[in-house]
Length: 103
Image (cartoon, rainbow, N blue to C red; front, side, top):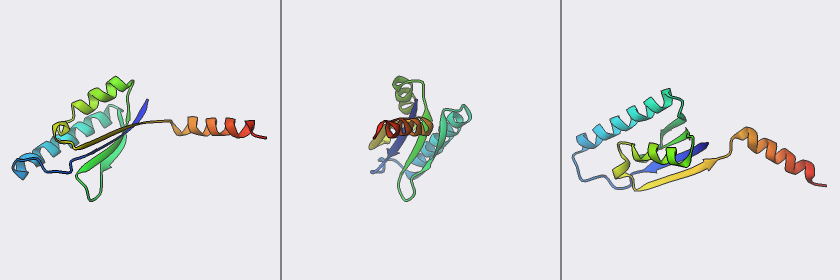
C-alpha cells in the first residue's frame, strides 16, 4: 500500500536549537535507512517550512502507523497527514474501464 505522509512542526519545541537540530539529523538518517530498505520511495523537506513529506510503501495501515510513531521528531509534530494513494497504473486502468462503460 502506498501512503503520502506529510508532517510539520509549526511551533519550535522549548529546547536549545542545537538540541533540536540533533533530532532533525536523526530524522533524516531514519528517512535514509527506510529509503535504502525500499519503504520510502520519495520524499524531502517542505520548502520554507519545518516539515517533510514522503511516499511510503507499507504493508498495512498498522505498519504505516509504526513507521510514523518511530520517527525521532514524532513527539514534536503539530500536524501529521497520512493519505492512502492509488498507484498510477491502477488509476489509469480504473479510469479507462469507467470511460469504456460510458455511452
